[in-house]
Image (cartoon, rainbow, N blue to C red; front, side, top):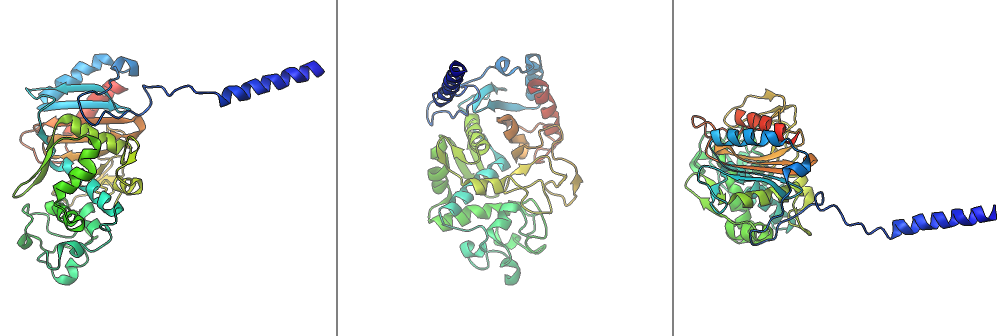
Length: 356
């Protein structure tokens, strides 16, 4: 019995030591990866290593080509699984994000808040000055920075050019969701709060920290970001990690979590300029109709997305540790401005055939 006790003690001690000395490194295929901030190096993972259906990859590519796609990427755990360029587009060529770039404005606004330069609950007029709209003062003063982030300012959404005569009253702030260009005023809010022009602040606080390339085009009507496909994927990877890049929390995580959560009760499929999947109802640009069901039924319910005209897309799927980017011309040339389209559901049918 004495010998048995000694053997049992020795066995338990060995187990304890084994646990304490366990220095097994994380699996490089499942640990989150971030590419270097410069250069073209970017780790890859083969589709075969993920047990994907490789016979479905070519039909996916054929669909992308038929739908006027210029580039397409899939990242899993930050590593490239697919990177395709079509119709003469190349890895070094820039393309416009269109309204997918609204998410860059949201992120930059969040950074300004975490630096104490602004608070999204403040009146927009605190940064834009009094009479920045053509609304009665008591109505203008209802509009906060958050209302601009959530498309609930109550300003007329039918006029694309964001000038004072067009910024007229339709409803009290917070009572109506309507997708419009007035979000552009957030760039002026950030500029006023930081005492720098918006692009300079954006470059310092977000672009340079993630190794993105690209530039803003502040046109007469539209404010649009242009970059390479990989830079769009870099921002998607930052979004997948809730604002963290490598060891730096670039965007405060609570703010980012708010950004990808339902921001108001009118359109639960909208956050802070992000589109949200898997909700019970949704609205679309240019309409006040409320549609039942999920935004993109074929896509994972936990997906959040940056979506722009002509089907510019960043899909972020936390449950799969996945980022998907699509750039190109409109899948349907007769309907180029529609932010949420049947294209998304059809594309996800093809993606699901590969990844499932």
